[in-house]
Image 1: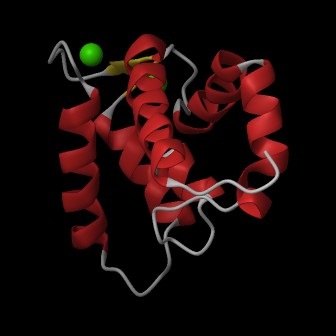
Image 2: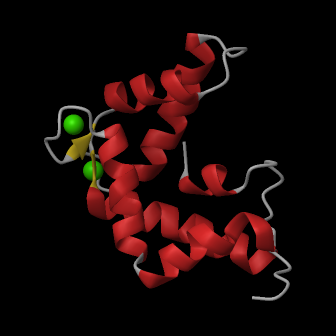
Length: 116
Ligand SMILES: [Ca+2]
Ligand SMILES: [Ca+2]
């Protein structure tokens, strides 16, 4: 799961002012810290790398239950290969941050942000 999908509660790939105000204020203050705290949610054995297995475990926990484990596995595989920039079969914190910041940047550019 991407940070964007946590912020974008109605899942329309646009962030409204209400959706982003608090988390984004925090993220602007320290985007790397905000993402680093997401990273440790995935890295269950705390070795500093997210494996495809760890990402699958996490998504099985947080995804809605109407998806089969196989569907989640397929989604994770696609997301994992996008995130694993140097193709060493694990995602480190730099790869994780780069991927999410790019995504959030796009969403902000797409959004009409009132009062921000
Ligand atoms: Ca790990
Ligand atoms: Ca990697």
